[in-house]
Every structure is written in C-alpha cells, then in structure tokens.
Length: 384
Image (tube, rainbow, N blue to C red):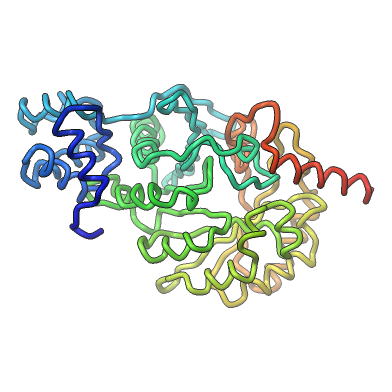
C-alpha cells in the first residue's frame, strides 16, 4: 500500500480529532492507522505501531489495557474511537468438533464464522457479507439475498475473536479461508484491506500461503486481487458447461467459462502454487463422467487442484447429494487423467456449518433465486 493518505483516512481523522463519533480502529491497515493518529491527534508513527499491536497481537478489548500508551491518549481514543464491532452471540459445536460461531453486527444482523479443527492445521472460515447477492441456487446463504457488506473491522474481528475463544483449548488457527457467507470479491475493497491486516507481521501475522479467497468468478475483481495481494485463490466452479453453470450460478451469465478461464491463466502464481477449483457435486446436475472429463479439458493448462464437495442439504432445496458410487467414479476419471483431486470431507453438517449451509434466510427466497429454483423443479418434473 502506498504511503499517500486516502480520503477515507482524512475523513476518519477529522471525526477522531473532533470526537464527533466513534471511529472503528479495525477498519484501518497498519499504514493507515499511523496516518490516522498523526493527522487526527499529532501522534508520532510509533504510537500507531503500538496501537496496531494492541489490536491484533495482544487482542486488547479496552483502551485501558494499552498500558504503553499515555493516559491522555487513551482518554482521547476512548472518547472518539472503538475497538471491537462484533458482539459474540454463541458457539454451536457439531459432532465432529467443527464449531459455528455467531456474531451480531451493528444494526443487529448476524454473521457466521466456522472453526474447523484439524490438529496443527486448524482452519477458520470467515464471512465477507451478510447474505449474498449472487443467487447460486444450491447455496443456503443465497436465499437471504444481500443484506450488506461487512466492514474491514467486521471481517478481521471474526479472526480476533475466534483466536480469543478457540485457540487456548483447541490449538492455533493456521489457515484462513474466505468461504463463509457472501461473495468476497463483491466486497473487494474491504476484503483486500482485511488481507493486509491478516498478513501484517504486527497484525494477525498469517502466511500468505495460509490465506485463501474463494470466488464464484467475478473476473475484474480476480484481476485486482492478483495485482494487489499475493494470497491463494479458489474458484467455485461447480459446472463444466455454460448452460449448466448459468442454471445454478447466475454469475456465469455475466462472465462465462471462457472468460473466467482466461482470467485464471493470467493470475500471478509463484512456483508450485496452484489455483483451487471447488466443485460441489449435485445429483443429476453436474455429476456425470462427461463432466469429469470436461474438468480435465478446462483446467489442463492452469496449475490447479480440484476439491470435490458433496452437496450439503438444507431446508427447501430441490437438490440432492450423489451416491457414493457416483462420486467415486467421478473422482476416478480425474485420477486417471493425472489431475490433483481431493474429496472434501463434510464437516459440521449437523449444525448447519458445512459448505453452502450458512445464514438465516426468511420464508421466501429472493425473486432471482426463486425463479431459478422453480425452473429447476419444473424441468425435473418434465424429465422424470
């Protein structure tokens, strides 16, 4: 990030200096926090460094805990700034140890975060939006529609609070995946800023190889992610023809498979890095051996690996999970073509914490989702 001062930092500096309203400090990267304290309170850069470490390395919950800041500075911050935007609501542990954490945001919306234990490779699946606008018909979150984007602070605070609540008893969180509620690249500004904080050595201090952003295929934002970050990329593929993909993922009407694959060929990768293709197997939709063969063709010139994910059922869905025999045969085709393929073990399904199960939709889906689902139901009756 450049050292120039952005308009958003200048606006926040005015608010902080005047004490007009609370400024959320976790909305700012390390560089921005230094600038903010300088512009608003005429504090030297090292004060911003100290404050940043208190927010993330030491996970302070109050300004009083920041003992190497002067009482005067703490009083000024306490009157015009705040630390943690999320209110912890509860933890829901499934039989396999996967735990869904729920947090209340400003305005009362609830966001869900999933902790997945795996020995030394514990993973935290974080959300980027309340709901989602993209309308993938197999996804429970899509039935909410988009309520709003999460702020940078609301994204990173999921990690801060999960570390505070889960690490002591369960071991450290080693991996971060943007695979929770929402489409991360639909909220790309806040996601990129959150990534900066995740990777900062004085911040949350994750390795770039341990942070993965998953997208349904927002091509312009994929280019931007590659230009402005160096984290790992996952693509929610889920179909091998434009016709089928558009039926279950409306984003394909805007950026089809050819355009998506061209963007992935251009995505910057270092030696031995690969793009992950997530493929949710849905009975009678995308689970044929021909689909498996087309995956081979689509990805043959892209360094990649394939994660096969059995469809996870949820209320009011017309979709079903393929049989074990179907999924095994599908995987075998990829193995025979020397494709790096992995079967994603279903985790947290009994607590609605598995892939595609997050969120709290109302009684009716948004119109754009309902139209797609009705068409699928009608086509299924005709073809029965």
